[in-house]
Image (cartoon, rainbow, N blue to C red; front, side, top):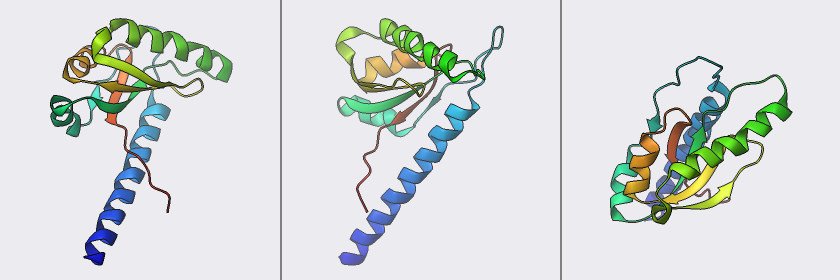
Length: 136
């Protein structure tokens, strides 16, 4: 029994680290400029099942143009967040957290909101399951 708990803990840690690497790769790899077609939107496959069961917490990685000036990049994050929120069905999504310095939103969504996010590749780079990390 103890070994299965340890194994489950290790699997959770590995998943969390992989998610962190995935999000870092997306955030650092988002390099859109004027006239550049956005990349295909990436959606965590686990979300399709979870949102049909009930509301699920997700991280939405936003398409924000790269800039040498961090101030300009930070100024672009708010409008990108506003664009996503204005296009989501109001009763199907709620804001958990708006980040000021990284191009992300933490949301709680259902199936209808996930479908809406899938139609926003112009402003959304990825939608991933927000997994809790347990202290080691």
